[in-house]
Image (cartoon, rainbow, N blue to C red):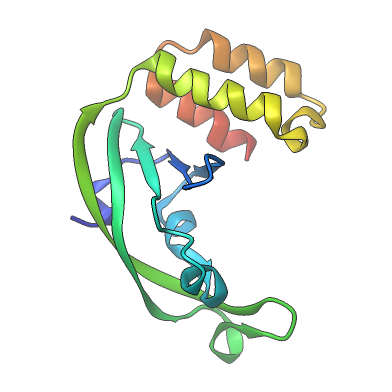
Length: 141
Protein backbone atom coordinates (compact mmCIF):
# COMPACT_ATOMS: atom_id res chain seq x y z
CA UNK A 1 0.00 0.00 0.00
CA UNK A 2 1.29 3.49 -0.78
CA UNK A 3 0.57 7.18 -0.33
CA UNK A 4 -2.02 7.16 -3.12
CA UNK A 5 -4.26 5.03 -0.89
CA UNK A 6 -4.53 7.80 1.73
CA UNK A 7 -7.10 10.59 1.82
CA UNK A 8 -5.68 14.05 2.51
CA UNK A 9 -5.46 16.16 4.52
CA UNK A 10 -3.95 13.84 7.08
CA UNK A 11 -2.16 14.09 10.39
CA UNK A 12 1.15 12.36 11.01
CA UNK A 13 2.60 11.41 14.38
CA UNK A 14 6.35 11.01 14.69
CA UNK A 15 7.91 8.46 17.03
CA UNK A 16 8.60 11.26 19.56
CA UNK A 17 4.88 12.14 19.64
CA UNK A 18 5.11 15.40 17.69
CA UNK A 19 2.45 15.95 15.06
CA UNK A 20 3.05 16.56 11.38
CA UNK A 21 0.27 18.36 9.47
CA UNK A 22 -0.07 16.87 5.98
CA UNK A 23 -2.26 18.93 3.63
CA UNK A 24 -1.23 16.80 0.62
CA UNK A 25 0.72 13.68 -0.30
CA UNK A 26 3.59 15.93 -1.41
CA UNK A 27 4.04 17.11 2.17
CA UNK A 28 4.35 13.54 3.38
CA UNK A 29 6.87 12.47 0.75
CA UNK A 30 9.14 15.54 0.79
CA UNK A 31 12.07 15.27 3.17
CA UNK A 32 15.84 15.65 3.34
CA UNK A 33 18.47 12.99 2.84
CA UNK A 34 19.59 13.59 6.44
CA UNK A 35 16.02 13.19 7.70
CA UNK A 36 15.61 9.90 5.88
CA UNK A 37 18.97 8.59 7.13
CA UNK A 38 18.14 9.79 10.63
CA UNK A 39 14.98 7.70 10.76
CA UNK A 40 12.31 10.37 10.28
CA UNK A 41 9.77 7.76 9.18
CA UNK A 42 10.68 5.17 11.82
CA UNK A 43 7.60 4.67 13.99
CA UNK A 44 5.65 7.19 11.89
CA UNK A 45 1.87 6.79 12.10
CA UNK A 46 -0.82 8.81 10.43
CA UNK A 47 -4.56 9.21 10.37
CA UNK A 48 -6.18 10.24 7.12
CA UNK A 49 -9.32 12.30 6.60
CA UNK A 50 -11.47 9.14 6.55
CA UNK A 51 -10.31 8.43 10.10
CA UNK A 52 -8.17 5.38 9.30
CA UNK A 53 -4.82 4.79 11.01
CA UNK A 54 -1.76 3.84 8.95
CA UNK A 55 1.89 3.09 9.74
CA UNK A 56 4.94 3.68 7.54
CA UNK A 57 6.78 0.39 7.09
CA UNK A 58 9.61 1.64 4.91
CA UNK A 59 10.87 4.68 3.06
CA UNK A 60 13.34 4.98 0.20
CA UNK A 61 14.78 7.90 -1.69
CA UNK A 62 13.33 8.38 -5.17
CA UNK A 63 15.44 11.42 -6.16
CA UNK A 64 16.43 14.99 -5.45
CA UNK A 65 13.89 17.81 -5.58
CA UNK A 66 14.81 21.13 -7.11
CA UNK A 67 17.78 22.52 -8.93
CA UNK A 68 21.19 20.87 -8.50
CA UNK A 69 19.51 17.59 -7.62
CA UNK A 70 18.01 19.15 -4.50
CA UNK A 71 21.39 19.98 -2.96
CA UNK A 72 21.68 23.06 -0.76
CA UNK A 73 24.84 23.98 1.14
CA UNK A 74 22.91 24.82 4.30
CA UNK A 75 20.15 22.21 4.28
CA UNK A 76 21.73 19.22 2.55
CA UNK A 77 19.68 17.47 -0.11
CA UNK A 78 15.91 17.87 -0.41
CA UNK A 79 14.45 14.58 -1.63
CA UNK A 80 11.25 12.85 -2.64
CA UNK A 81 10.64 9.53 -0.91
CA UNK A 82 8.52 6.51 -1.71
CA UNK A 83 6.70 5.07 1.26
CA UNK A 84 5.32 1.63 1.92
CA UNK A 85 2.36 2.03 4.25
CA UNK A 86 0.33 -0.48 6.24
CA UNK A 87 -3.31 -0.05 7.14
CA UNK A 88 -3.48 -0.62 10.92
CA UNK A 89 -7.08 -1.83 10.60
CA UNK A 90 -8.35 0.58 13.20
CA UNK A 91 -10.54 3.63 13.06
CA UNK A 92 -9.80 6.90 14.81
CA UNK A 93 -12.54 8.74 16.67
CA UNK A 94 -13.19 12.44 16.41
CA UNK A 95 -12.33 12.80 20.10
CA UNK A 96 -9.04 10.91 19.70
CA UNK A 97 -7.87 13.18 16.87
CA UNK A 98 -9.15 16.31 18.61
CA UNK A 99 -7.21 15.35 21.75
CA UNK A 100 -4.00 14.88 19.72
CA UNK A 101 -4.37 18.31 18.13
CA UNK A 102 -5.27 20.12 21.35
CA UNK A 103 -2.36 18.45 23.16
CA UNK A 104 -0.06 19.70 20.42
CA UNK A 105 -1.51 23.19 20.86
CA UNK A 106 -0.74 23.06 24.58
CA UNK A 107 2.88 21.96 24.15
CA UNK A 108 3.99 23.60 20.90
CA UNK A 109 4.29 27.37 21.41
CA UNK A 110 4.40 28.16 17.68
CA UNK A 111 0.66 27.44 17.46
CA UNK A 112 -0.08 29.74 20.40
CA UNK A 113 1.80 32.63 18.78
CA UNK A 114 -0.68 32.78 15.90
CA UNK A 115 -2.96 35.83 15.75
CA UNK A 116 -5.93 33.55 15.06
CA UNK A 117 -5.06 30.90 17.65
CA UNK A 118 -8.30 31.30 19.65
CA UNK A 119 -10.41 31.02 16.48
CA UNK A 120 -8.47 27.96 15.32
CA UNK A 121 -8.82 26.32 18.72
CA UNK A 122 -12.59 27.00 18.69
CA UNK A 123 -12.87 25.43 15.22
CA UNK A 124 -11.02 22.33 16.40
CA UNK A 125 -13.21 22.06 19.49
CA UNK A 126 -16.44 22.42 17.48
CA UNK A 127 -15.56 20.13 14.54
CA UNK A 128 -17.90 17.15 14.26
CA UNK A 129 -15.91 14.99 11.83
CA UNK A 130 -12.28 13.95 11.44
CA UNK A 131 -12.35 15.41 7.94
CA UNK A 132 -13.32 18.82 9.34
CA UNK A 133 -10.67 18.63 12.08
CA UNK A 134 -7.95 17.87 9.56
CA UNK A 135 -9.21 20.46 7.08
CA UNK A 136 -8.99 23.20 9.74
CA UNK A 137 -5.51 22.20 10.91
CA UNK A 138 -4.23 21.82 7.32
CA UNK A 139 -5.52 25.28 6.36
CA UNK A 140 -3.74 26.74 9.37
CA UNK A 141 -0.40 25.01 8.69
